[in-house]
Length: 193
View 1 (cartoon, rainbow, N blue to C red):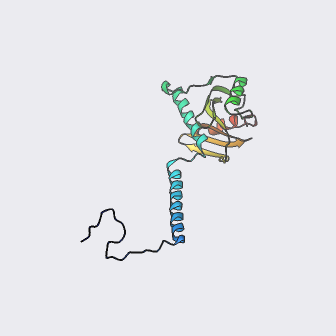
View 2 (cartoon, rainbow, N blue to C red):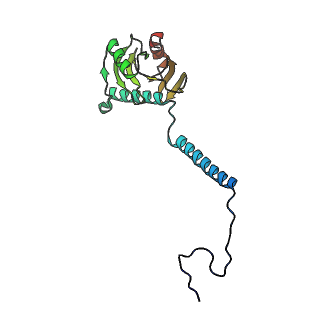
View 3 (cartoon, one colour):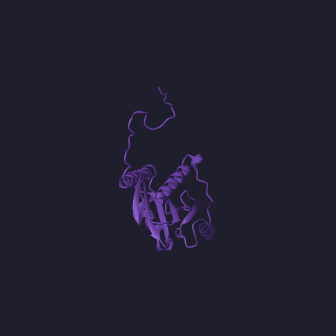
């Protein structure tokens, strides 16, 4: 009687060797291709479902800054935005905007009183709070990188936003929806674009 060792591979004495043909080449390639395709599709779907779209990021930043400044003007002084410039002159605002956004960045018309200016939260955007008649509105401008949304209007509760493009920049102005017909012409003059 013979002993069979545990490390021994292959057929045991007295058994026929089982020979399997190799997997066909086209089957190996198709399985690999199918696996790669499933991983890529899953990755793209995950990105689009997990990360928010950025095509209205500047509008969202302008609305958030407008709400924060409006709360600060009311009773909630803790939420007051910290301005990089408070009550700047037209020259100070232009010099600051060149440093933050770029040389030809459109700004609000010089006839409007500027309350404050600060760097925004989206890719080097400038947030400028101005007084347009009896209303305070928020003006945001950023360089248009890639595909940016075109002109449009957006409602966010009691706020109304106008977005437009000019000379490679994306601009947004946000103010109270109830008085939009009153402040819009003051902010969207040819001098401001």
